[in-house]
Image (tube, rainbow, N blue to C red; front, top):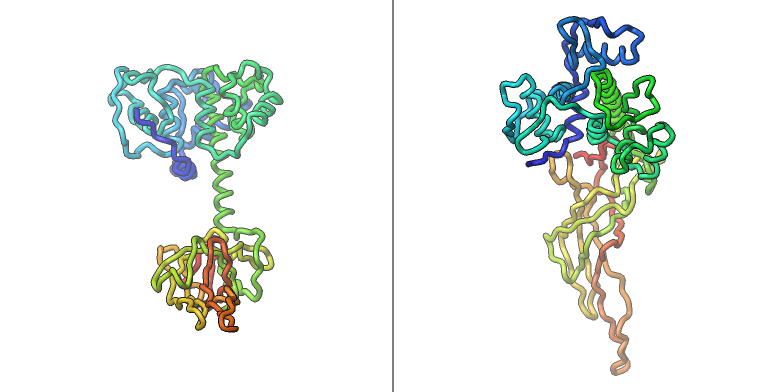
Length: 385
């Protein structure tokens, strides 16, 4: 069976989302306002993600089937109409089933797996282990060690010894993320092998939404805030909003990737380089990242020659802008090998001086001046034209 890895970005973007046409709030006869999951059930019902029954009940303790789970999740992430890459055939569910549209997409997105190659078992129930695993798979979470996960579970659950060892890291991440549905009076029990009830499903989904909204705000902040860090401070920069201009003649250290030389490299030859460190202003906003790959071009070379000259090389450097065009940012720079005495052989009382080749080895730093003012966006890190 083809396994499709869940695309976390698709889920995050689609959950930011939901159905814009709100329906009128609905009260269920078996969900009083003091019910532990009242707020989450009310929220998701109003958004059309879950619903009740014709007799005006919600049936909060009814278990969620695999087909219902597929429908709730696919609607929650707004993927009802995504193209289906692989069309599966099952003995126990087909395109006449009310949930087929959701099931086939849930299987393609790897949200649910068939029990076998031929059977989906749409009426089987979803366990809390299934639900917790799904949430952890799609949510961003920092790396957590097994020890940290165990500590989080031990401090919060009385049934820690009943949690399978293979599931402890996943459950620990879910606890740290704060997405586990905890139903009174069993808040201190993970009950990982129990089936998920409709009320618990509402809380799980509401927690997922809240976490996604939190990530949305982080993304907005990240997309509008300059990156900061340590590096080489450049003076006399001008800033207007998110665009900073580095003045012409600014000297920047550049580190060669690979090797170039006056004797072995040829005019027109390309090479790569990067800044020796982050280039920052006095507020430590990163103007140019050390991770930017610069494209170098050798304009001219002069070979070293005995008795006459040392090797010379003329280069220029460019960076790629958002449209993938090269932007010439560092001016033409000339490098000349230092004159040294070498191979002092006394012949007829005369010292023989050999010219030296100019070599820039991998990691060697060259200092290059900007040939014109350079503008950079300190939020995106883009070198502008």
